[in-house]
Length: 307
Image (cartoon, rainbow, N blue to C red; front, side, top):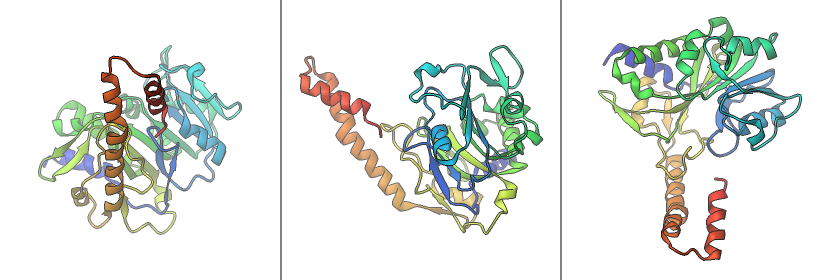
């Protein structure tokens, strides 16, 4: 196997850490698992928020951590919850690798709101632009983030042996200098593919949590990484099949990954229930030429149901 591919996969593979993982942000897309070591963190920087901020709201209300959001495509008037005064800020800009009128760099952003803090969170979901941004962040700035959560896109390109695959590796290598992957959640918005030789199922989109290495050494590590974690959401897209890391991921981290079969069975049953009870009836309803009023009410309830 190509050494660049193997090194990239080893960086992605989650490792045991001293802390239990908390789920922040509810029970659906937009929730993330992070280590339970939030004491002393002052601010969270969240580029790419769409129009919801459940993760950042919970950081404020439960942990008193300020949150700073940016997204050129978002409108605070359409946010599901309003900006919390004195605790949250919003920039109508892209996070970029250079200064432009419609973008802001991470260095400029951090200096504006947390210039004296060295205990921060970075939660990034910027639809594939993460590699360009990561390539321009200094090591000193990255070290200021105790916890980093990134939704990585186009991970299948790791196997392509292209320039982009090298860019992905260099971004991961920069992260791994001072941080270690402690959680990987496959996003089921796209399919996973098989990695030849290792027979690992590699998701194209994955939410990965990194913990700074000084906190990796803060206490006795858990013996295993539980995959999937009991606190993982079932899936990001409820009407698509869930994706779980298969047992061959153990090859990257021997004797350190334990498959949670009970969680996998439970999540599959939930998916089958949703398909049977919700999706199929909705499909039938949409086929009806004349929709009775009581069915309209049921359909409206289903569409607005919060999974």
